[in-house]
Length: 113
Image (cartoon, rainbow, N blue to C red; front, side, top):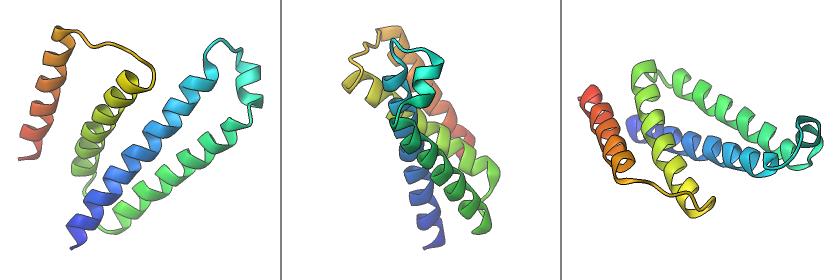
């Protein structure tokens, strides 16, 4: 049960941070750094980063191992980052990039075995 909770926390942590990064990217397009820092959406970005830090700390309190947390976070973050980039920012992925993504995911899975 504790492992499932940790897995869900890592999953949620990756979702929170990719949402924060996506909002940050969206508000920073065609703006100066001063305007970005003054944007009201930055408050949400700060809150999401604090939530992610809290989640990571909570995982370690539950005796989560750093290597497992880091590997799972990278996998979830990478997957969500690609999905958000393609669906929300209309980015495209080439065949070589797709192969690289598959190799990266396979490598992470092999490291966790």
